[in-house]
Length: 394
Image (cartoon, rainbow, N blue to C red; front, side, top):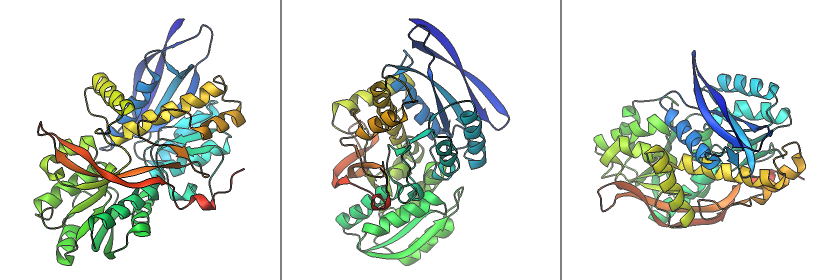
């Protein structure tokens, strides 16, 4: 068995940093190159770092996914669709046929068409925008995380369960934000008092908080990932609203890294989730321990999804002996989803998006005073997104 050093270049604006990664494979075998475009810079960079690190954890020290030696060719999109498109064009032209890594819907919209038009495969480990889930579904496009709306459809069910009759809903004005609020409205049975769209890079929510106070809803539902979500939660708490107007969120509006930044402001917030670090199954416990041991931090939901995606890819590669040119065989193997997920259920629907369970969770302090995301109850079983019926694949 030979050991080779592979340099992975990460581009962030004008800065290029070479990372050394060690891969092992059978003598003479060329590793399968995987295009991995993600966000590693900007305040949202920690999300891409968790995604990258979890994917590498699945690859392991032997440099393989399943039995196939692989090389990740990592590009930082800087949260700019134009950067991501340039990276995708370059990597496609270099011969790469398998892509993953993108963590924002607006960036995926710039990458996915380039990959698919080249005949390659794109397997999403986070965003699942509605535009690609229905009529524009594609045989070479898989989403291993969730369809954007479905996560929020589960939150609407959670709001019903919690007895909220009047709700204000908020999200950034971009594809995932619009999908979020549409998803919530699809299942929520109460009154939407106000629907508020914020800027994607907004940091000050004082105007929105004043509006919420004046409307006096039973609760709010808000989706703001990354730094915006941290600022929103802290400002909501500082404004004294948390105790009078409960907050419901999708889990990625308050991930493990965000909880550290928000502190006690996170305590008591409800969330819809498909997984938390408190899941009671062996695969989840093993993943959380291995991630903490390897990187010294608690994995986010993004990390869990990246790890599951890597193992999904591994199962499909094993089925075709690593031959990505066997497109029919690789596609069929992906559809089987023959791997052990960290979350407790996973199959693909007809649009190649997950059918899975969702949970109502609550952020609470454990015995050590650490705020964790505890599971309250299952709120949706084998849930399929509403766009699947419009997808017509052979």
